[in-house]
Length: 363
Image (cartoon, rainbow, N blue to C red; front, top):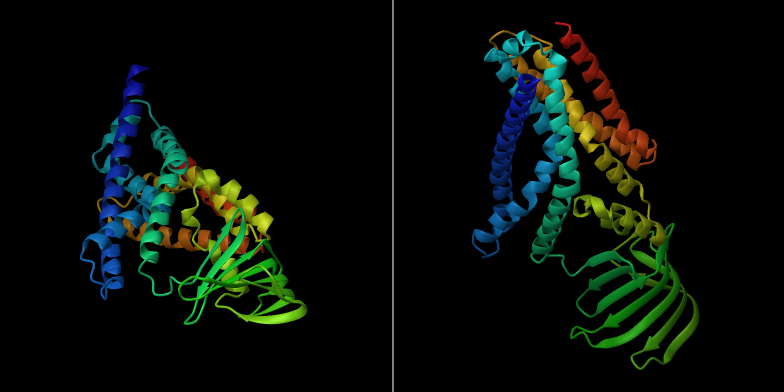
């Protein structure tokens, strides 16, 4: 019994070591590649090398999180090939272990890693991505145009050569902002007037305001009972709906709150629900990828030639990525239920991997 415990401990340690090495490799590659991108972004700004390095350090952990299922796939193939080439797997089988037992220990490690990444690493990466966007936003040329969804409503800031506008709306209904308030300021940010409207049709950049009331800086009504008026904006319905285009800024622990907030403001919650289910499925996705690695290493034998394994790994990564991405897109566009769109690829990969492991266990 003690012998099996030591073997299991050895397998868990060696697999974790391989995963950490793979993470370091991907981190280094991601850092260098992203650093060139950041340097290119800041090439016209005299800031030195410190900011690009800092920006890369902010964003690379999030990229690693997104790539982690493929890191597990590569780590699994590396780990199992190492066991095969060193004949350790033969010694373990002589000791009474099967292929299934050898795979089960790394599988357990994957599930634990998945839970740890979702509950602990994801909140950290979301903070770093927020920091990345904040710092980079300070150098964006269009930073004078901002929009956000808060507990107090939908807020938009716009600026042109003459005035600065701050717009607030209680919620979005179809293509209309409801209960709209437009606060106008001059270039020195001195208040000019306030425009109130029951609703604003934002289908185009030329908003159509309904039931408009205008008030001066002293709060007195300048005009009222105006049935309609136009307001030229830099935002339309599509831009407003894309405020949550970067879901990496949302922590796992805040997803439910964000879903409730979006429902209250009249936004579609499909993207956020997709992220929630993807988070729940993350440990099982890692498990499915590990099973795939076991299928194509323990289940196949190319002797000393490693090129077929490299080709198989690249092919699997490409197929899984596009399959998973295509299914998620169907969920976001409501062509499939979110649950089906997220879990279907993982279940298919898991079933294929499980069948392959059963086959490999019989060899």
